[in-house]
Image 1 (tube, rainbow, N blue to C red):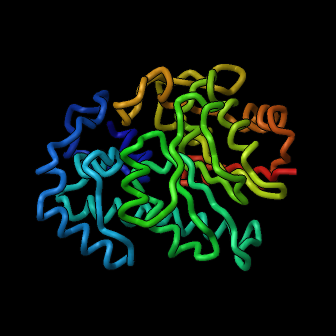
Image 2 (cartoon, rainbow, N blue to C red; image 1 turned 45 degrees about the vertical axis):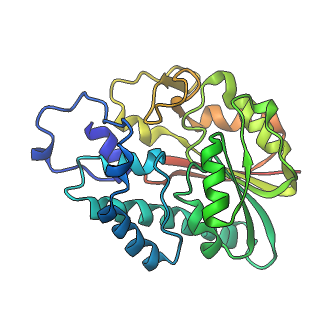
Length: 287
């Protein structure tokens, strides 16, 4: 469990809090709605949302919120709620900096698709952090897309378990997939890259992150195959099939040539361990 804290919270929890749980998976069983969304917790959400000037609503099936709230790293729910809102804000701010400082897209209106948005942890912050972007959120959970559209007023697209079956209404100047390819098996990893790349507008960008070399530090039992692609079934998201959504580590020596072979899109940016201190960043340009 210590590895999960290091990976998600970028620091180790106090040793006394984890006396005999080194090899146990974190408990991600859904909380009862009356516990997850108690008046006390909703009050904390309203406080944090007001500070970040975003909507406070939380869906009872938000697995990221559940995972953070039940994580024993936090000694009280107020700190857990702060982490949820603050981390979403940090990711939106980081993406905005990429759009402005790396891709120089900070002046004109752009169409931005956030792929695998979940229930809006990052989504709710994007309009404020990237005002030049018209944001569309996409997720496989119909409850998630409905929730984002109804509570945040953001356009949504429903994803599909089969990459080729997703129907996007348009091409996008930027498609952003945060910590999605860190979960895909070999059978769908490349197909998703191709599907998303096809829906990037000419001269647009596909931005995605992966578990890279730094992530292996938190999986000491993992043995990386010679080709640089490792998949382990199972993840914190328990409502998706473990053989379709697990934990994937891909090294740049595998990612860079494979992505180019599949898309013919040049890599314009690679940054090791750029997100959360362990996920690698890749940016492709559509030609």
